[in-house]
Length: 127
Image (cartoon, rainbow, N blue to C red):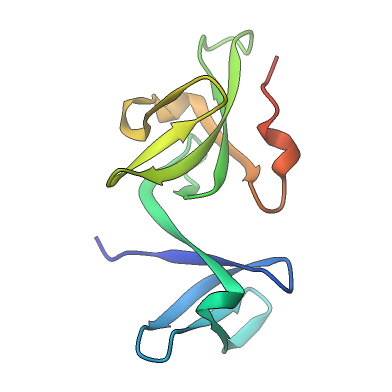
């Protein structure tokens, strides 16, 4: 698998696709749907997020920092909101009370509803 990254630009408060990472210059080249030519940003100006390589029930790729709505019982009665994090050399789903390896979730019951930078209010425990 070729690693994929996205980046939250701290000053612009926008999410971008990472096109290139230059470790020598400590820069990333960022693009979005409206910009065909990328622009550079320093490492200090962005937060990089790695793709998990997994997809939610709608086929959307899951990245670090995404917030998952997880329907545990299949009937929307028992739902949780989890943040996806990279911890101890693996991806985990995390809430206030629960942390577990992302691979153990039935991702057919999970969908991305936002991310921690654009939608932090979604981390409030689902009812």
